[in-house]
Length: 532
Image (cartoon, rainbow, N blue to C red; front, side):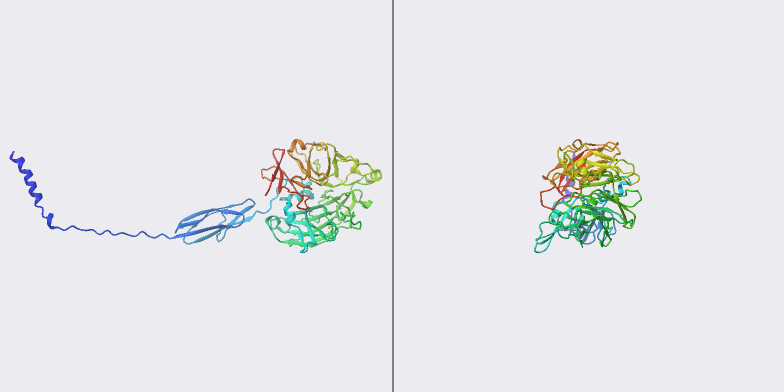
């Protein structure tokens, strides 16, 4: 019991006698704070030229790596970064100061989307025009392309029917060659005084350089085609005109034959007037008829008062090189039929194209068709009144044509109305290996109608328009006359769609569609009415 009491007493004495309890002062320890380093920040400013966009910049710490990406708009391509050698559209920038970066975009050069054909068909002016086609010039553009003097008494009018696009200076972009009609205050109509030719350089990418050339032509309204007429490797302009279109107002107006225009890389123009029989034209066609590698031309008259009888029947100009042409009758049996058809043979549209794959160019021509029932005048009876439909004159190895080798496309009246033929297109819409015909027409020059004739492979054709098109015609509710229609891969899906080529607009007649086309949907055509 005594041991148990001793231990707690001893501990009490030890603790109560600790020497530090009253004699040592408390110690204060100083806390030292190290400041955090200041990180510099810099601004990355990102801009883009016309034709694309780029990811955003911003403010970043020194040494930050920022990756930016440039994206071109449709019709443009990425060209690079200003101040950088990188050609990638993705660029990584390390910031060690305020930095400006600009993405550069440029217009894509023109690449044709035309349907392709046999070698003989690709000699035609029709193909060359389609092969250099991007889009039609809209009604609003035609108004904008008019020229007017300060007092408004001299005006020059643009019409898409007298224009063609081509890259004349080989810079990758299409220019537009056109004839402008002249009107003056003291004259009732255009076409009574000389117009002028113009070239709009790089038109479709916003080019603002215009080259102008005086001429003694009064009127166009025939055809404007592209061909290398002298085998120098450059495309020339082949100009068919109806120069005395306003004959009823001035019977002294001069009839003109085909003219050829050379255009240099510097847009210098040389006009070559052919010394051959002048015609009144509403169309024109070119191609290698005799298979010798030179481009020949054919010509039919359109019905005009006071025409020379030497122009009543069609002629062919055989190219012998160096702008030397041998003019001869197109029909080998002309002497047999001219007594019957005292008024000759009129045509509002004609083309050269090999339809049966024999390697020879055929002629597709017509004027009025459908439910056209002419009143026969024995003193002025014409071929097209005897055959009021579209006809095909079949070509041969001699480069000759005859009404004894002809097909009349009689199945051409799905509208049950009179149609005036304005143009044709050629396509294998059903992929059976035969070239089919799309005829473009109008009623009294107010709107358009499309007619699709299936090639049956035996020199006959069947109208399949209603089976293949959802909407095939319009008479001035949303569009004007169509003089050409082209088969091009507009939507880039590998098949060929239909797009109006030259349109009959003087600007401002009706509110038209800026981007009218027909999409090829597996061998059928569905209308697309869009605006840019």
